[in-house]
Length: 207
Image 1 (cartoon, helix red, strand yellow):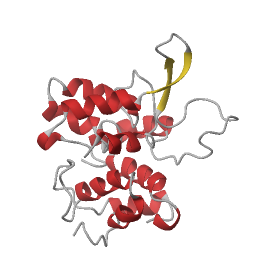
Image 2 (image 1 turned 180 degrees about the vertical axis):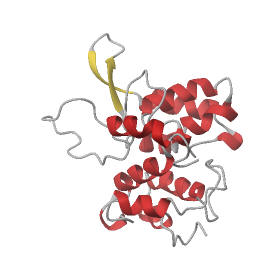
Image 3 (image 1 turned 30 degrees about the horizontal axis):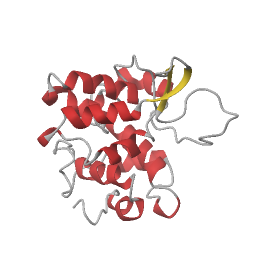
Image 4 (image 1 turned 30 degrees about the vertical axis):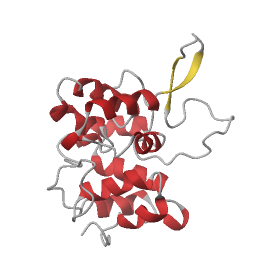
């Protein structure tokens, strides 16, 4: 499910966590709060501040979601995608954030068929509505000469037309589907020049 029946539930939370807000001035010391891939918390040495939650999340989901439930082709891809997701809070159970995906990945250790999708990059309508997640990542990953859409609304309009009859996992590398385009978006986080052109409706690969 992409926008699906949970969209109304997430309308408020999406605005709160900025599900497809393109980060600007990342690393600017003048900004306050957390940056992508980090969340406020306590470090191992007892100090407080921003904690990078991506290594824990990626190690967990790579361990518990395998075979047909694999969400990322490698931990490196997971880390790159995670850096472009809103960090959220460690207590998140819903909404487009790393915190929510980590929570769902913990649940996946007991029931991978049920929770791996929500713990993965799409959010599966639980950790964000899928088209909003897709377009948020596309706006962050595919920029400059690699950009495929001028803005989020244009991306959303196209995403709504992607066939959604194939369940996403990291092995769906071809065929005309949302799942194929999400796969290429995840690997574009490491190689945008090759994979960003595979995202649009007229994708040369997802056909």
